[in-house]
Length: 114
Length: 115
Image 1 (cartoon, each protein chain N blue to C red):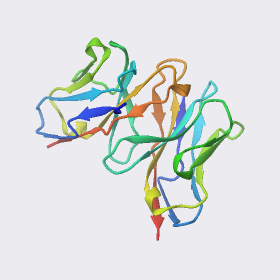
Image 2 (cartoon, chains in turn blue, brown):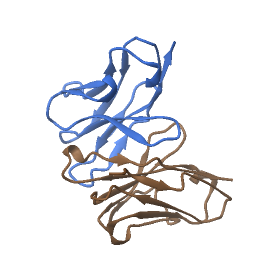
Image 3 (cartoon, helix red, strand yellow):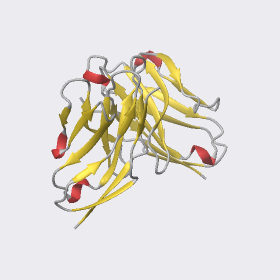
Image 4 (cartoon, chains in turn orange, yellow):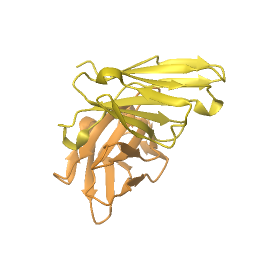
């Protein structure tokens, strides 16, 4: 069965600093991995996804993630944090083949300090 | 493409009452998912529809919960005899099998508060 672990429930960075949010996965098949962002009282918006193509995936708003099979990781990065990046971030793995339902991590709340 | 919509956005109810939520997926998406998100946690899968068929239900979906998707379009999630533990955000998502990785598109959610 697939699973996801997000290390660090809260991360604080200064505006302009590097953002690094960690995600490790477990999957018996080549995984489909996703990062979503959630702003308060809103649904989830896709940042980027890995579906076994390029290992370095670029997403929206300057975010990117690198799939590392040897480390079973899919960490999310952004070179320079902006105040508008403050939100909750979720890593998810898709249950495939099958229903393709998502198994989510517990989330990381990003705080950006002025 | 107007996105996934959910109604209502907020629902406050008293313990023991029944509530029903609606989800309208993106029109060409034949896969529909319901998730529940409690405070400080990631969303947890509840149930999955392919067209009108409910193909998987989580053990989280007790017998007080029922979901339908008549005609394979909108879906409803009903909770009978609500309990305080049902307080959560209920998220609906839809997808189309042709998209890479079966990317899901989420609605804004319905926040349920049970008093």
